[in-house]
Length: 242
Image (tube, rainbow, N blue to C red; front, side, top):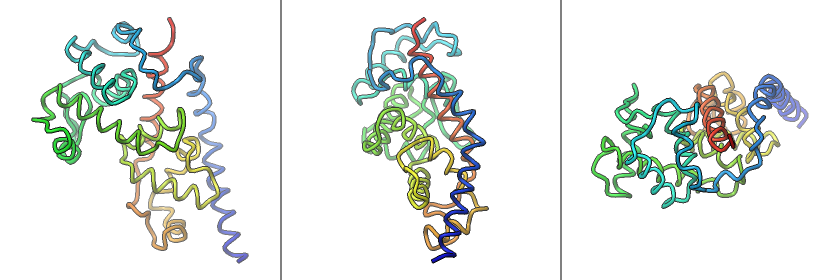
């Protein structure tokens, strides 16, 4: 019993150290006058704002804008969240193709494409309108996966899942719960994600009874944390009153 308690305390101290390292960065990213604004308002009153906003690199066509707004409305997501995702994913380049094979504005992976094609009966994710619809629909599914989480935390969890896959987030939540932390707070999960890497195999043994996470090791946690930070910052900038 004493040995188990010592191990748990040790892991909690490790997480505390990670929290201290990233706390300053987190506070800086939270510093926005619109921090308390609803993240899913879907308010269309600023239709052209994002075309002029300095945080965006280039303009979208009127057809692309129309598609983004319509599908966002259909699936219950603020279109400005989608614009922020597109900026991060493809820099508004509809012809973008990643090294891993992700395509289009929403950078949909081939496997996800197959799932969305079955659900929506799409022709091809290389068709811009289909890529937009599939990406927004997929994000809305991820958002609904975290319906028990509220406010900005829910958005952050959904974005992290869009980048890394929901299974990675579930694994991090399991570790958080094991350590007595709140598994539904993004400030907790972003500091737990590093513990999914291979070096913490002994922790994995304690949590899952085997020396690796339930869904495998995850070494790209920095990318996911930065991804969420970038998109939420862009989204807040789009909501900021000039």
